[in-house]
Length: 434
Image 1 (cartoon, rainbow, N blue to C red):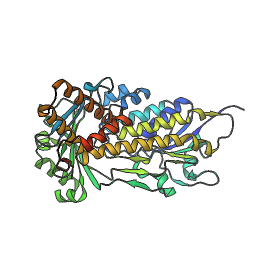
Image 2: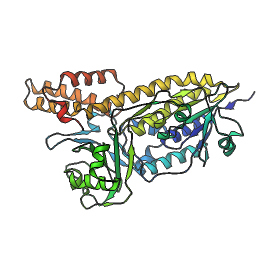
Image 3: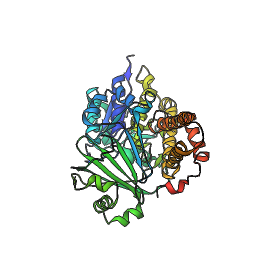
Image 4: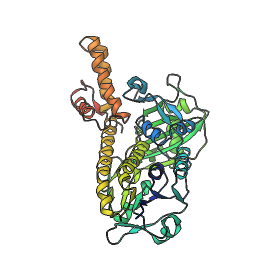
């Protein structure tokens, strides 16, 4: 018998779907990507974390990302005039890559999908409907979806991949609930031209600032500035009746956003996102698996979204590698067994990022940074010893926030210990985001 390639149907052509299609097509799988071709002009996830660099290299996307994006050398957190902390990735090299990128998401997504098609993935320009499967399959493509994909030759695929993002098609069909985070935030953001970049901020640096309620981002792209606000629904409603009015008022009344945007021109509509924390209670089943936001997503403050999407696709591709070419029929249960370690890993990644983001929302991270600064300036002990201790702490915070050490037991344990015992009288509540 000749070997038959693994037949995979991927629903969705965002970063997770396109990356998985690219990796599987390179391995020799028969990949069909269902893509309805609809792309909003703005997508959240415009800033990357350094840990993504290795995955971009594996996808052969590093140069393409640099071409459409802008180098991001670090992040600054601005909580008040006194509480301003900046991190340069290069300071923690080689443990952390010295830079990453800010990207316009539609352009990035298009390049990644084009690479998948060039590698041999079959793109079907059609919306896809899922239905409950029969026999040993939990999910199936609707008949019209099978008919729309000549590459399937009228048959169901060996594996269905839900890469539909927050639409979560598989979860909706199967009734799989998601664990929703504690916040009920909404975000409004847009792109501006003719802005005034702060003189004390490095080019490309992402600026995160605390608002009276919620927080804001300033992400410099190649020729535009992405400005966004994230806040509770009641606080958002107090700013105005609609997204445009809310964003405009936040910019004009905030001491950090106002001087940057100034008389800048808004050149896009105002995009709105909500529900920033959700993790599916199941990530795979007989004959199907979720990747990217369909599996789960976390708050965007530390920019882990695209990394989590690409990492999920990488993990799934590696789990499927032994099954890409088989000489006998493939049972859905075999794939389920192979994919369970991926689900456990992705659950761990989502939980770790949620935990880290929580330190910023409840004030412990900024309180810890202030306590460390105060200790360096006025605390007892030799300066050299304090420098070593402070650098050690900041390095492990950077390892987590960069994604390089997000699952490190030591780094996470150190932060938990310091968050409980190392605040030196600084009250986290005063540094919390409302």
